[in-house]
Image 1: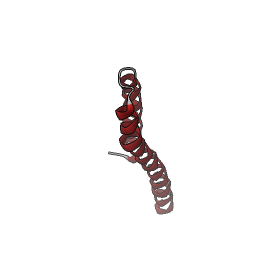
Image 2 (image 1 turned 90 degrees about the vertical axis):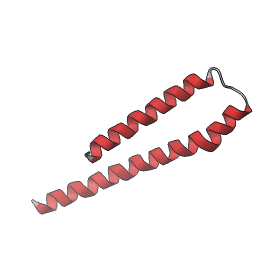
Image 3 (image 1 turned 60 degrees about the vertical axis):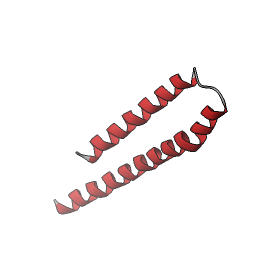
Length: 70
């Protein structure tokens, strides 16, 4: 799997998670929902964003390496 492919899959998964969470919030609006979002969902989305940044950085490094090897 290429880095670009992994990055796109991660973006799709993050988007799908957010869409499903928004749909869930239409029915689940109590303190437990708020706590779940704060303790589970938000940290997960932060990690996904960090992974996005890492994949972009790694792709830049690999592109530089490929250029240097040519």
